[in-house]
Image (cartoon, rainbow, N blue to C red; front, side, top):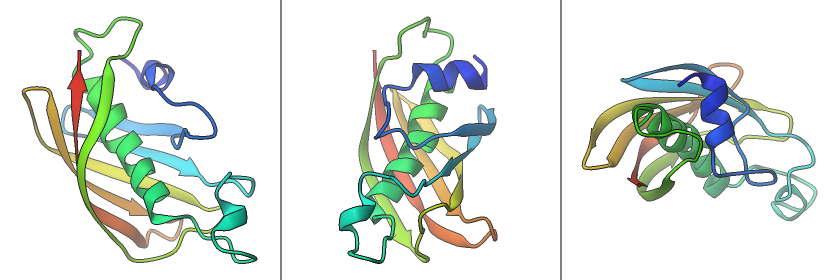
Length: 144
C-alpha cells in the first residue's frame, strides 16, 4: 500500500481531515504533515480575535497520522478498497507551543506495539522551526 492509497482510505473528510501528506511510512512508524488554513471551522471561536488551534484538534491530527494512517499501512495485507473502522482508545499528550493559522506541523509516530488489532504509538508534533509543539502517546483499535 502506497502513501496515496492510505490517504484515499482514510475515513475522514473536510472539515475534519487533518492529514495533507505522508512523508514516510514503514512498519516501524510514519511521518506526515498538515497545514492549518486560516478558514478552519474552529478558529472563529477559539479564541475571539486571537485564533489558536485547540489541543483536541492537535491530538486528532496526531491520531489521524499516527494511528489511522500507520494502522492502515500495517494492515495492508487484508485491506482492499474499503478501510476498516479505526478508533482512538486513549491518549496522553502534552502541549508545549501554540499552533496558529497558516502553520504547517509535522507529526512523527513511532510504533510501540501492534498486536490483537491494537496499535500504540509515541507521537511528536513539531512546527516549521522544528520546535516541539506536542508529544505523548496515542492508542487505538482497528476493527475488521
